[in-house]
Length: 110
Image 1 (cartoon, rainbow, N blue to C red):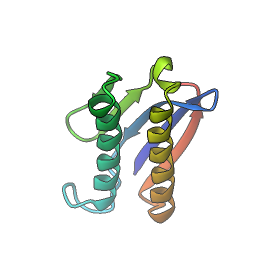
Image 2: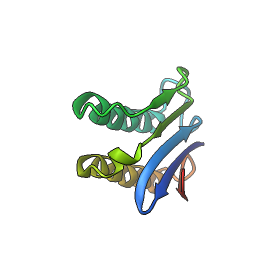
Image 3: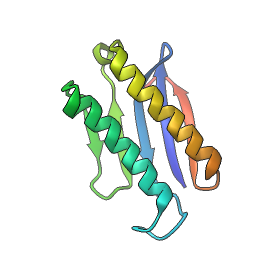
């Protein structure tokens, strides 16, 4: 199962942590993992490459774990807030559709 943790501080998303294989299909053919990976890459690209905010991003290189901690200065940026909230909504939708393969947890503090 893929676990998506969305960390919040004062109502804003302060970080994300995604780990695990969804188990929907074999590695390389798993549409749930592909959807999650694509969404994570999109938010990282939007924040770091388009907005050029240089937010720390960790990927283990095996596609098993990614983490992103959002600095407080970036959490105040409305563009970042919209991107991250859209990610949270998308992950919630995926977890409802594939409830045996993805779990989304919202956690206070990072």
